Image (cartoon, rainbow, N blue to C red):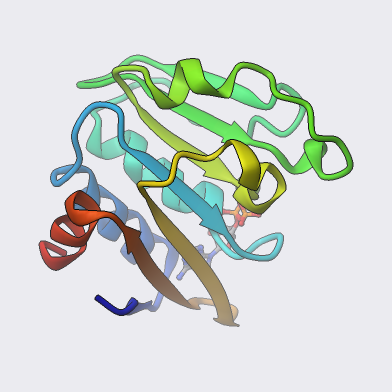
Length: 149
Ligand code: ADP
Ligand code: MG
């Protein structure tokens, strides 16, 4: 299966797309988010949080690397930007094998630790309000997820 692309015309549409995605996910699923600073990775993750009925405000975990939220399922939100120049394993497997949804911003920096089966998502900046969101599923489960979008 090839990549599936969606264009969104504002932040709300990006969040709505992420909410729809959540309805197709199951505990233990791992999503990676790539895209330049300001592309919309955290905005997309806010949509995931909303889809999981998480009440707490989601904020970027750049300095803490991992933040956990309680919702319909737990959300493990990682921003591993700070790990660019290290290959430190801070116990990623516990999250990847856990009962929640893991979302990893800047996932390319921990490539070696990522599970093989995952949904890779790339956000590309088009203009101030528009983005292209590209879904690249790895494994049967995530192919089904993307077909459901
Ligand atoms: P990142 O986490 O990739 O650095 P953020 O999500 O923090 O990016 O910031 C993206 C910014 O772009 C937010 O201010 C958001 O409101 C804005 N934005 C405008 N249009 C879009 C869109 N279509 N999708 C996502 N974000 C958008
Ligand atoms: Mg961010």
